[in-house]
Amino acid sequence: MAEKKFSVAICGGGIGGLSLAVALSKYPDIHVDIYEAATQFSEVGAGIGVWPRVWKILEHLGLSEDLARVTALKPSYDLSDAFIFRKSDQAEGLDFYQLRTQGSFLRYHRPDVLQVLMDHLPPHYNTFFSRRLRSYEEPQTGEIQLLFEDGSTAKCDILIGADGIRSAVRRSMLIQQAKKETALGRITESEELINNIEPVWTGILAYRALIPTERLQAYREAHPEMKIRVPQANSIPIMYMGQHVNVVVYPISSGKLINIGAFHANEKLAGTTFDGPWVEYVEKDQLLASHAHWEPELQAILQVTIEWPLIRNNVTFINKFFPQCIDKPSRWAVHASKPLRTWTYGRVALLGDAAHAMSPQQASGAGQAIEDAFLLSTLLGNRLTTLGNVTEALTIYDKIRRPIAMEVAARSLVNGRLFGLQLPGVPLANDPDRLPELGDAIKDNWKWTWTTTLDSALEEAQNMFTAATSRVGYAPQASLQSKL
Image (cartoon, rainbow, N blue to C red; front, side):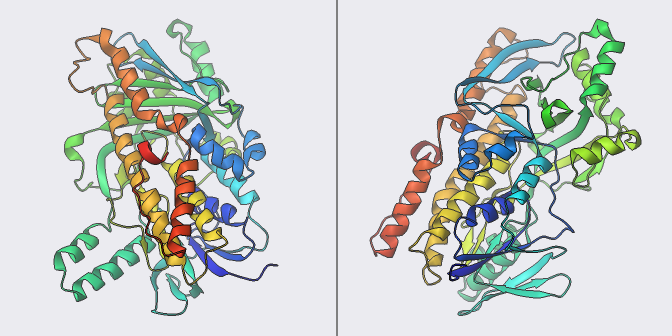
């Protein structure tokens, strides 16, 4: 065992937290403890998309072979079919655009990805379950003190908050920053920090469900006149579009399941408080009624939706309990974190949804968490990084990653508008011949996921750190255009 350089506590055992843990395992001199609020590592969710930009990172982490076992799709950097865009808010649907990308868009069942990450955790890592963080204290010198809701405590040199959109690490960090601003007499800045603690509603309601592929196939056979397309293992995802609404449908788990997400947007409500639980089951009729005028193919898919268990699940569980599932999709009020001035404070940093929870319209939320993890681990693992200069490494992580993730979040909202047939200056409802222009706009907004890599950002971060440790000024700004 290598001599310990410093200890890192990861608060949160989702995809972002475990990606960081796996990435840090390449550096044996970094001691890692993982704290998870649940009783086991688990993920809420169904489908997860992986674009070429993120796939390259997963390959580097040595996960490609295990990930290949949980999907029928083969990764490729060749020209690939990624999506079919279809106008569906009418009696007869219309395929109007096929999105082709340089590299494949891989789809996974989220718990499968989490299991692969779990399988790659080193046995010497300490993992603690049922440890929900309440707060932390970072003294001027010495270790960071962690206080958990059950009254237990722990210590670490560096704390990484990967604890999701309602992050306790973010809350504690912002409160501490606000206290400092208040002490300096900067009341406005202090109030801004406190105001940034709670996420905001995007105005989007997402109805989510999983369908056993066999169930939709049986429905098709019972209604041959409807000519319903049943997604197979290698089928291209379909985006069914209507005014301010889009429904994405694609297979996961090697074609055993079909993932469905119906997104209903009302931009006038963005930034307001959502009245009610963020996630709840709803009657299927509620979803069907909102698509009553849509084409038969989409209505058939919604008709056979099953309950998507809100517990963090796996395919075995779903298959075992299909008979007990009731026909209720889950409805999610999609929230996003407010843009922060910094993701770091002292020897504490945020990662993933704790830093930049975003709308899912670019299938990039998990991918951005993986990017956070890989770049952060690279800086922490740098041979020049010590406990004495680690705050500089965290600052550089923030300078590189925060502008990029914020731009991705903004692009995701743009995608959502385009999916809802909202192309500025083009009345698509009255001029369907111009629908291909919409497809081009989506492609242009999304192309960074397959035309860029994290390589230049990694190089920039390393150069900045080398310069900083040599006391040379060097602090450019990163963006998708300039750094990726």
